[in-house]
Length: 191
Ligand code: SIN
Image (cartoon, rainbow, N blue to C red):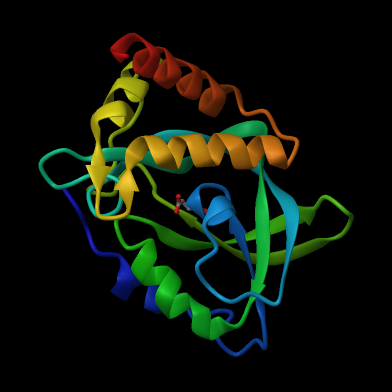
């Protein structure tokens, strides 16, 4: 099931009058920056872990056969690594549309790898959104990802691109890379 969060996100106007805003990306926003940005810097946020627990009905799956994409779940002491982009507030119209299937803008502090911190926005799909799928074994998640496909392409492409982009940042993510291993086993077995 999908839920359009565009209207709710428009009410989050806290940074609207700023000249520029930092956006923290931890999923497709790391490997697919389809928006203009002023600069980008590897960064992290504290207290969150990346999980393939969000359903995708609009990008990497369909209403009938949703794919799985990442969201963040609160975990004490955890650090989530990703990419921060400095954008103008106007970019959020496009970003809200792209992240409309359950993701809400949340204000967060981020720490840049090369030093310093900033306040900005992260899109998080919480467990109460209509598209939330929740936990499953990493093998079951890989199986679902192997067969799902949507208007933005195969779900497997999302997983493989994210896994590759994280390694390029020098970050190994146990959850993401375990699912990638299972996916590659399925692909190998199907050949
Ligand atoms: C993000 O990348 O920060 C949000 C989730 C996604 O679009 O994959």
